[in-house]
Image 1 (cartoon, rainbow, N blue to C red):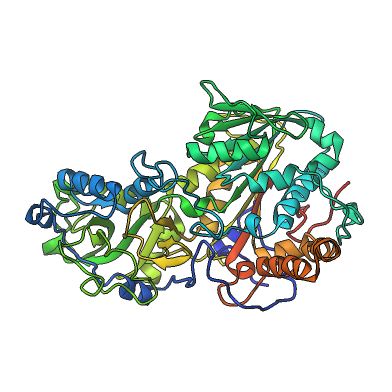
Image 2: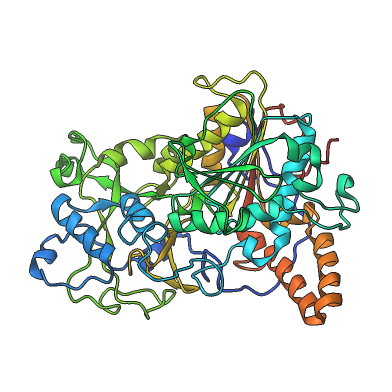
Length: 551
């Protein structure tokens, strides 16, 4: 089967191609996934989705209506900032919408008892659909601990973007017996707590979470509502109900110390899709019009040339004209019009910005677009994804700043995005109450997410550390089936039927099949799994990626 990474990366020494897929399944698509009903990535749809796209900014529109009513407090703050500085990069807009103290989606809730997750929230994630998902993640870490020599101390469990804490709770919780195709757990799929030797090797659990409300929810689930939470310079501390393990919450992974003797097991589930992106379009610039960057764009020095050139232009965010409606903005039919009209729109910078001069040149994959696509090419770049991938790799394999004589640990990334090395384009989406909405409507109340550049993550990880290799991405459906989801779910379904009736058993079956659904837009097809492991020249594949358990 074709490798899941581009040829240039596939030939690199430490990028390991994906394992063969298992037999495909097909079932109906459900509408309340994080990515919404429509998985849109091509250029043609970009033009139809953003018909309010403009090559110039409209700052004067703010002056025309000082009494304009913005849809949220955050929208008003963003508009005021843009009035002072000019249009802002899409990454800045996303960061403010998701993590602003004033009405940010995750960090500044303006609705009482707000919950982003589940049927009453905006979207449903895999751990909320079935407990088997988290259990198998725990089994995966266990198999890596066994394969890497059963280290007796220094193990760290790290989760970035833990949501409610459901995934980590399933990883840690003792599971009952199940039949599995994995030899080690032939009759007892058990997570970490069922293996005392590994449980006793864990020094600490780290949860990287920016939201104060979600930190409390995670503490209540993992430690108990009565458990105290104390604060230090590092973060927030409590004691887990499993083995009394210490849990530390930090706002950034940089707050977690890196030590050569540690064995970090890192999980990032639907985390990278929420990291801010910069978006660009490639344009042909005639020599006579190759003007210097404008001051309002915070641009770099002049890009004047004496011959026509291809140059990247950054997509910026500016307010929509006062009095705009869904009709005047041509809100696409794929997006609900039950929200207020979008407060903002994408505009294209008229000249180079500092981001457009640097980011599209940061990878050979990006640079190739000038010759393979030409004018009109679209590009999304996520610098934060590169930083996190580099951090994961340094913890596992060491780096010049943090040498590690023997690489150890593993990182498992599960998210949605192209698994064939394609560079994401036009993937920004807004989700509210399980419906696809404009990402520029009701800032702070709308969840924003993008497709993950898995090939970019692999490139960043192997560039950051000589001590790691990357496996995948592999479709989530393949990964979970290779991990034994069918066998585990069958045991749970029988138990549910016996204890609660046939309807409960059918619910268990429906849930696991949803996780591996390979139909159009199905979670088993759209979501991908990627692993970062200690470098071993590809001699050992991890479980779930075509490898066997090493005891």
